[in-house]
Length: 294
Image 1 (tube, rainbow, N blue to C red):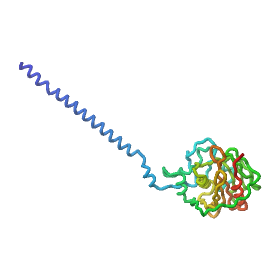
Image 2: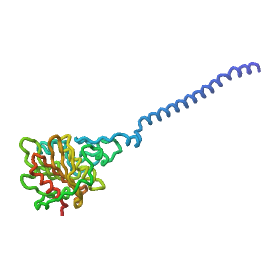
Image 3: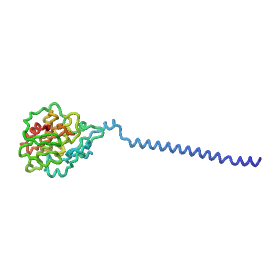
């Protein structure tokens, strides 16, 4: 009996020690899980983007004159739209076309350099190159439409075929193009083109035309700014006429945005530098002569 009692007494402590070890392991494992959860939560907080309110409070950056690659951006439709690098009002067409991409997916987007959360129209209003279009900008009297036309079936529009010295030129990356001869002593020249709308269509045709006019600054020298000359509705769309000033020179330009029944509205854009000011009356002929085919 004495031997048995001593043996039981000496065996008890190891069992208690094991139980204690097991309990401590459970505690340590629990602490490790808690530490891992806290670390994950901290990482998630750091990675999460700013709240919308914080973005809105930030500055709006107006896109530069040079187009950035947008991916559309805003648009991934396979229909061709021009995507041009900025060039003087229409510098030598043959050299500029080779350097330009024709895929619409790379067409300049009005919002590519904006802080996230801003709309295309907010970008327009923040752009110092574009003044507000107020009621002070009146309508203009338009001449009779030209009898001779160029039919652009890709956009569903017929546009005036301008008289000499204008001539039809290789259209790419647009869908139709007419140009003036290059003026002596300068690389700029007048240009009249049509293409599917290269920017996102807005609910208002007027707003769509405003964004289109802003887009056309990519085809004028850097530093170009707009001054509105006329604004008015046209059948199935809107027309804007404006002056573009860059340094000591200016150009007259116009855009007509019109729904030709295609997947995208059509854009007619004409610009003529002051070195060819004798052809400025053609701006009105373009504005009055764009119509839907059929």
